[in-house]
Image 1: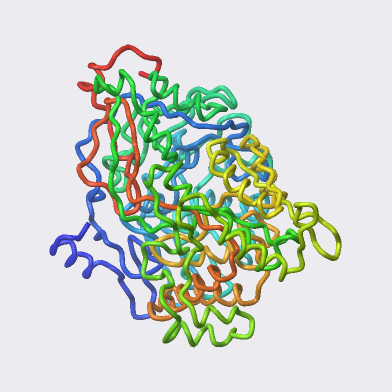
Image 2: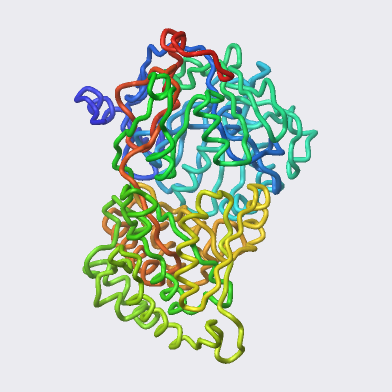
Length: 604
């Protein structure tokens, strides 16, 4: 939302404050640009500051959980645990990306060299047992994450040290200038040392930890449901970042093992709110007496969100996927146009960029600074990258893929495959060309089956394997998959988080899902990370990165949509405005008058 003139004047006067020795002292920190909200803002623009607090909401979730420590190296935690249980040093909002405002830390100090940061803690900040949140707790949290947390944390913050200056001031020292890491440290949750010190942090927690957030877990059955209940006298209840948000006294998540059962449970009133991701279900299943009576509201809420690359992602560590021509051939045999017409009711648009709906999407031919960057790697890149605009392979939507099949067979022959008895095999080894698509949701199976049939026409075997969430998570961690459905890239701009997804240093982590080990990719993501404050070079590096990934054919692009599909039992009030980058359901509230008109059901 565009700030008012008064707010803009206040913003100019309040951020940043730069002293003579180039030390910035501020209520906020921004990875790029300046914060939208001034220092003394009263609430986010998209909330209702007078929203009533109270009531009960139930959500349905597919899967299971076995752990209350989301930072453990194994196990699965329940939905919402970080949002509800743990406040962070600073917090963001739905209108901005890469901008954080004071919460546990009311103020930050950092130099323009971006090689250290001091957090000045809010004296009102407490844990849920009433004990004060102190600098020693912040230092403890960082150190325990470095020693016993997920390995990605250690890699990102390698060389960073922390020191307690006094009870309310804690300083982090970085080995080199890195504004993005300063912002990352500002998003750190804070754990109570007096509760966590006797726990094995590397292992799952089977009891509820002490938090610092607005809710604690009041009831649960491991793997079946969890109930978050508002903490009495929550320290930040009236903090500007919390005004008008988290308005329910209790929020419950019920777990289901089957998508069909999950949807039917919603329609019968077992839970209250659902965001639908399956076009067929949205078109055909949201009907019945509860919809007709107005008890359930079905609604499409428009947005123009930046889109990530939802895709079938190849694990290119697998030998059958290391040749780009094989990946291109498999791309050719995914018929999006037929799928969209027959399975999605024409509701989706094909994704054609890792930064869809942003200026960083690569269109046309490379030019200017982008071309200069790519010229350095010309010998390592496909020549068509410089001479042709990238377009996804497309069909006429009729289901006839014979033209695409001919192209695919040509590519496969060029890459060393041949057809024997109707099966595509490696001409040298006789190894059949086959792979497994690993899924955790059966909803994707109906989309994969026509793809499988098209591949079979080329002699390629696709095995579709759907497992539960726990097994899927473990296989992801162990990189035990050929192909998965993944979401890569995205965001309002290319952030330095892309290093985690694509840099070869993360090849052994779950973040580098594709398994790239490519000096060109490494150079481009590091160029993105190094130029977060340079608009011209960030634009050039972002487009170059997008273009290289597209022409490498690391994924089979899927689709996106320009609206949220939501359905909910008519017991909610909500603000008139939604935030720029999210649905904003955290600002909804319980409407007691509307709820009183609903029939009796299990979800209150």
